[in-house]
Image (tube, rainbow, N blue to C red; front, side, top):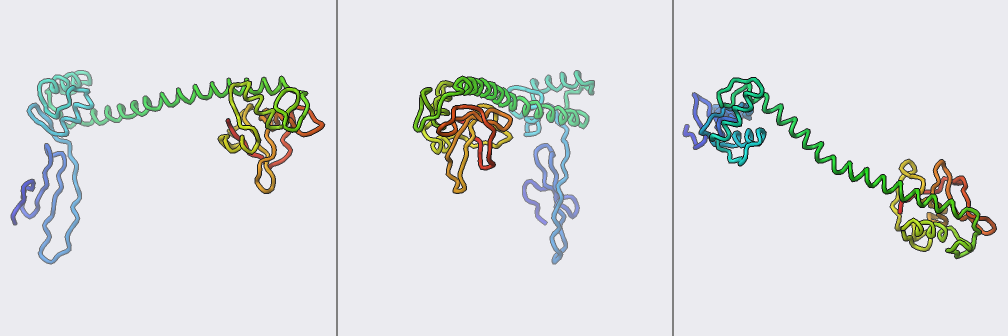
Length: 251
């Protein structure tokens, strides 16, 4: 049997060799006419020594933070390996062998875990800042909503002289620095829909008919209550949500 470059022959089997022997795959040669046997790879950890150049050396340089990571086991890499061996009480020979590999793999896992935590921290900080900003904004909304308690209902009203439902919500939010569309239907189309569990006091509550059309809007006050301007003959106030046909939104 002829052996292609990259293959070594041992008796009746050929072995694929890779860089520094890091991966060996025995390829059994079946008898003529027999079904081929799928070879199973055997992964080994090669001994690395000065003068070698391969991807395994580059990986060690990454774990030990050797710069530049050239993949060449030169004096800089050997010095880093000696420091690593001295720090962890390993045999100081400047070579990477079995005991060194075990510890390097453990350190690599720890580094990846720390990197994942570091990547998550900015997102967590941003979420925390957003929550604080949302609480602050909603607190202003609730303050303005309560301040207008007792104002009369007025069809098409958008001022403290008289409000309809969307006019009241739009006025309160505008005082808190947020511009909303004019009608309850338009406000619902622009708002981000959220679940009842996620709703916070100061968010929006939309009421819809059996046909699905939004006909009323209020400001969530917490505890199943809303601030709203209900209907002619009534004044702005706080009421219990009286129907299950509602959904929540956030401007």
